[in-house]
Length: 421
Ligand code: PLP
Image: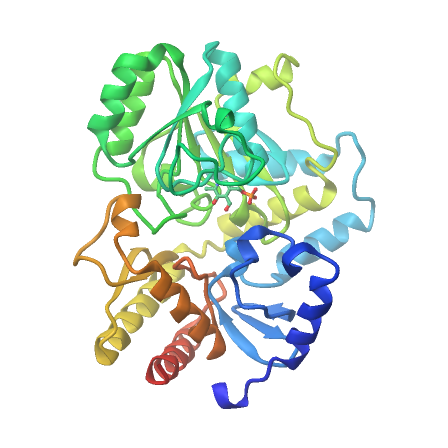
């Protein structure tokens, strides 16, 4: 297949983009990706401007959980926006979307919609500070909470990750290893007076795909209760993906606040903050500010409402589990056949691939960084050249649109890519 693939049109567009846009991309996350321009996406598949097709396991970094161009979601949005898009005021679809999210989640009492996960995290941290009167928050190595100054983290938590980001911005947070209950307990025992919130990805998807150790989230919940600290789950990746109630449903641990994005709206740009009435109510009194011109637009609410309807009426989770497991098992078989030291871990709908390193699962960021991440990134480029579109950082997202035939075709393509190495 690689013999017939050309990339002339993509290369031409990329050279034009370089004259228009820094680095030719609109998000720094894409700087390291192969420079492919896509013309179209449908279901599990993408087509580039040169006519090459790809089985997609990047899913736009996660949002295309229902597959590309999901007709039920897009039809609902098209119908709604034919009557207007942004009112700067309330409209009935807000009720449908908010009720849909709260019913699906089950545990949360109130929800606010925004545009990006980054904003939802900031709103959560602000609420936590307002509610506790404390200033700092605890976060964890390897967890990503958006690109703003107070949360963007590089490999060394003491050193700003970006030029222009000040070391003082990082002083808002205290960074400790995740999945280590003793580390959290001893920190909170001595410094709880200054800590407003503990924020974490309840399943660490940004660096690996790492499940919480048995009892870890329960312990975090117990400690936050003991010290009056707000527990925030950043479910921007896990929310609505690992199950209808996200990581809360998976683990049974309920946070005070949780952020959502990506899978919440069939690919439309929506994020949400959900939580207890006690905390969220501070937005309602005006005591805490949360604003945004495009918050709860007609398209956002139509997309969220339709997504919640789909998840309720036609839940994809059992099929995702089956298809994702079969993909993961097939990849492991191919790796063994080609002598590739591939390590896979996580959940069927979102698992992580890495190369080298010690046998067995890793349980935190340090475990992941002991593996050959550069080697996997190079492999991901080879996979793209063979028609399998995956993230260089190792995550494989499976959508509700992937089928057994897709898996079989993917494995054929991976087989060719590995044979060509
Ligand atoms: N939180 C988590 C866990 C994420 O994975 C991301 C993005 O990948 C964000 C927050 C930021 O979301 P956004 O890119 O929509 O601003």
